[in-house]
Image (tube, rainbow, N blue to C red; front, side):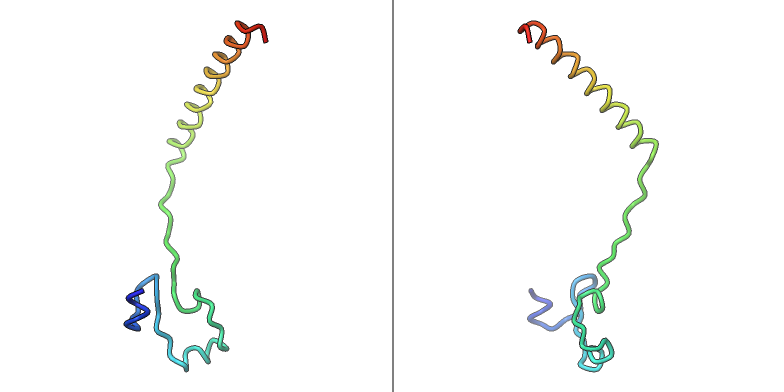
Length: 76
């Protein structure tokens, strides 16, 4: 809100565009034409992701086995 009230540029947030700049953009006021909000995402460690998936699959299998045991005890 401060950037708006003070008419200040703020990286990845606000840009004070001149009328000439707006005219150059065919009066298009879409924010991405004036403010670059792109942030590069960090690379994922695929080995760690695969390890997490394997761990979760094991936990799911154990939980399903326990649930099956409980259902068997209940006669279901």
